[in-house]
Every structure is written in structure tokens, then in C-alpha cells.
Amino acid sequence: MTGRVSQKVAVSVVYVAAMFMTIMDSTIVNVALPTIGRNFHVPSTSVAGVSIYFLVSLAVFISVSGWLGDRFGGKRVLLTAIVLFTVASALCGLASSLTELEVFRVLQGVGGGLMAPVGLAMLFRAFPPAERIRASAILTVPTTLAPALGPVLGGLLVTELTWRWVFYVNVPLGAVTLAFGLLFLAGGNTLAPGRFDALGFVLAGASLGLLMYGVSEGPIRGWASAVVLGTISAGAVLLGLLVLAELRRPRPLIDLRLLGDRLFRSCNGVMLLSAAAFIGTLYVVSLYFQDGRGLSALGSGLSTFPEAFGVMAGAQVASRWLYPGLGPRRNIVFGLVGVTASIALMSLVGAQTSLWWMRLLMFTLGVGMAQVFVPAQAAAFATISPEATGRASTMFNVGRQLGSAAGVAVLTTAVVAVGATRTVAGRVTPDLAAYHVAFLVAAGVAAVAAVVALTIHDADAASTIIRRGGPRPEPDSESVAA
Image (cartoon, rainbow, N blue to C red; front, side, top):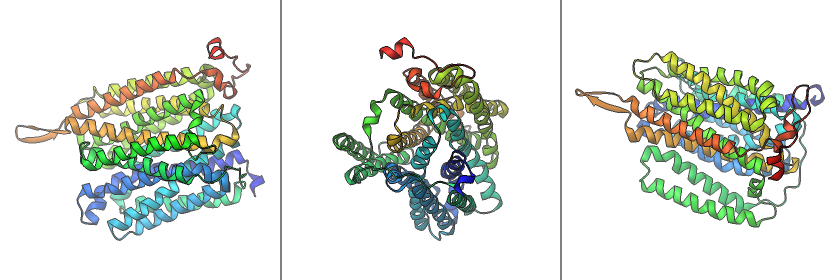
């Protein structure tokens, strides 16, 4: 059956569906948290673990996914991860207590953590460098459409059905994806990744898990909380030990030597900062629409959704014209300038301003982010060997995940620090200044990402730049000298 469908198509379909489930799950559940709290008769602050434990588990198991994919084959590991995620989703929907739900969310995180790096490695092995820009345009579907669709679908399911359906919705999608993968994915070649780096896994899992937990709890408990300070400090110490241990190993689980590749290093920096600005902004925009302007969860999701249309349109512009014509450096900088301007303009939207201005800015934000995600993903692996692709995809996804969590935490902290409400004539009213400050912080992060993007050398990514009707670009003198 595998011969009937191109592996480029087969891998793309399975990867996009798998990532769509994972990323959407991170946002769709947030809408249901208040309802889950009421259902289990606990305060809304007590259900934060439903999201946090998922993110921690995700971070822990991302670190081992590259090695598993190389050792047992991409198809086997990817489909096993889909089974884990799908079964765990069903169990979450069936949970009879908050404790059960949190345990099943950890299991969901295991599946989600294994999916991303393995699927990304398979995708870039299926597409040669000259076609990476096409593959990157495909990647924008789950990474940018899912965060926008999650609140819409979540609000609809919670309102019309029950909170349990925010988990059940993964089951049919997971089953169809699994069946398609079994029929059409090739077996996936196994490599020789060496002995399993148990010390690296323990240090990576513990450090990333503690950092993710601390960063996620910071806005809830307060950054001065002993729990937050303790977990972040312990995570930082263990991360330092991880760096020392992995640099001494010939075949490390987390191959930090890959950061010696200047193109891979620059693209990772851009993705980490861009994810922080983008995902953080999406989270704050949702708060702004609901708490600041009084929209329902569904109304908030629909007002955020223009971002998805912007991404889909922008991805086509990037892959067809801007990337081949400008190269990754100018394409990414151009996109980040647009992202910075779009988010900064959000800080000027007042209480009486038409919401259509925010919706327009969400669209332009999506167009700008497409100019970042598509070129950065296309260029990042241009100088990475096929044998190192699995390890590189692990690092790429770890950076993006940490950036996303840090962005939400930092911007939420900005909102809390200013105060989302104020008392006027004895009446508590929304204080939009809190959201304005958060938007300015996000714009600042995007601007820093643009500076990092200036370190990209187009000549390093020459194999991915195919101009229509013209030869590949010659290395410029600056890149040759470097």
C-alpha cells in the first residue's frame, strides 16, 4: 500500500494531523478549565495542573524522541505516540476525578512529546533541501492554525456539549491518522544512535520538566513563591549539569554540538523568541477579548481566528515568492518587523475602539508569522546531515516549546503586575492598560528576534533557495569570509 502514495504526501498528512492534535490540545483545554473546576467542585486555581502537567510531560519526553526514532524507526515511534495520545485523550474524557484527569494528561504529554521531533525528522528526510520550503509551508498548518482554532472549538464544545468533548475530539482524528499511517507510511529506516544516554535523559527530563513547571506556575503562585523559585533554580542547576555531561559524551541524547552550526543556531534563536512572542500574544489576546472586552469564550475564539487566515495566506506568499526572491534572512526580518508592528499597534486599541481593528491586526500578525515560521523551518536543517536530523529536530522542538511556555508566563506576569482590573467609583472595571503593557512586551521580544535573524547567512541555506527560472544564489563575500 505504501507505493500508492508518495512518502512526501504520507509523512506530511500524518505529521500535520499529529501536530495539529498536540498543539490544539494545549489551547482547547484552557477554555474548559473553569467548567472542569466546577464539575469536580474545586476552585478554578486548582485545575491549572491539568494544563501544567501536560506541558511538563511534553517537555520531558521531547528529549528522548529523537533517539527512539533513530533506534526503532520513525514510523513505529510516531504511530506508537499517536496511539498513546489518542488513548490518553479518551481516558481524560472518562476521568471521574481531578487526580485521574491530571494523571491521564501526563500520559497525553508522553505521546505529544514523542510526536513532534520524530515527525519533523521524517518530514525533512522525505523532502530534499531544494523542497524544504514546501515542507515548511506544510508545517505552518498545525503550528499556527491549531492555536487559533482551539479556543473556537473549545468554546463551542463546552457550550453546546460538555467539557469532556475537548478530549474526545482527539479520538476520531487520532484513529483516522493511525489508520492512514499504518497503510501508507513506509517502515522508516533505523540508524545506529549508539547506547541510550540514560544520564542525559534523566538530566534533560528533570531540568526541562522543572523549568517548565516553574515557568508555568510563576504567574499563578507569584515569582517570589518558594515553590517557583525552588523549581526554577533546581531546573537551572540540572540544565547546567546536562550541558557539562552531554558535551563530554561522543553520542549524547541532546547533541549540543549542533549549535556550533551557525545557521541552525540562528534559526533556533529566532524560533524560540518568535514562539514566545506569538504564543504569548495569542494567550493575552484571548484574555483581552474575554476579560477586557466582555466577549464569550466562543466570541473570543472567533475574533482570534483571523490570525489563521493570515498565516495560510502568508505561507503561500513566503514559499512561492518571498523566500526564493529574498532568501531566509530578509524574509524573516521582514516578517518580524510586521509582527512587531502588529503587536505594538494592539497596545493602542482602547475600550471604545471597534474590535474589527483587533481582528485586522490578528490577520496581519498571522501574515507576519508565516514569514518567520516558513523560512526558519526551511533553512534550519539545510546544513544538518540526514544522520543528525533526528537529534536536531529534538533540539528544535525543545526550543520552541520552552519559548512558548516562557512567552505565556512572561506576558501573563505583565498583566498581573499592572492589574487587569481597577476600581472606579466603587465599581470594578477592566483595566486595558495591563493588556497594553503585555502587548508592548511581546512586541519587544519580536524585535529582539528580528535582531537575531540578522545573523542568518543566506549562503548557508543556498540548497533550499530555488529561484524560479534562475540559478541558485552564489555565496556572498560576507558569508564566504565568515
